Length: 173
Image (cartoon, rainbow, N blue to C red; front, top):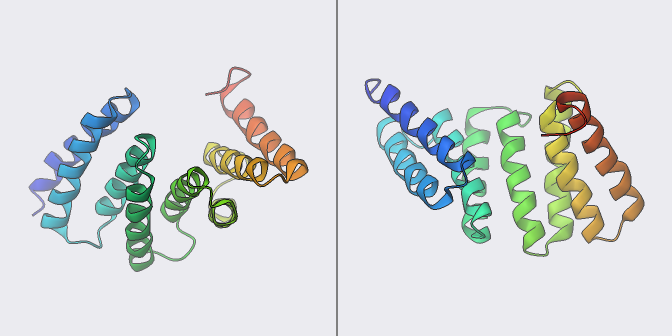
């Protein structure tokens, strides 16, 4: 079993590179292979299954396959709950992806709930200027805009910008 880990890690890293290069279809196919192999070799409740499922959900989101992404997020949440406490940052990542998908589907209240839960986890897990918090603030701000809660949107988006500027400078990410 453990002989497969270096090969699967390499496949995961290649998939991630394709994702960041914007080659979403290629990344999707490789993440699917990687996910199948991780499950076959290590079982469903394994941290690498969770990581791969989150990446695949993100790719599905970017491809506009929101229902598929949400289904993967639901599976990821179950795995995270089996492996970790309710305050695991990997669960927060899943909640962010869910929130963005729900926004695209017009489920604003549900999206806000996902982002708020993610923010709660990240604020307990990271320092308050951690770049991952900016992603959640961005999603939450977008949800507030969509829900016409404009003052909260402005406050939340300002926090996202402040964190990005502190971490990446005036030009941002």
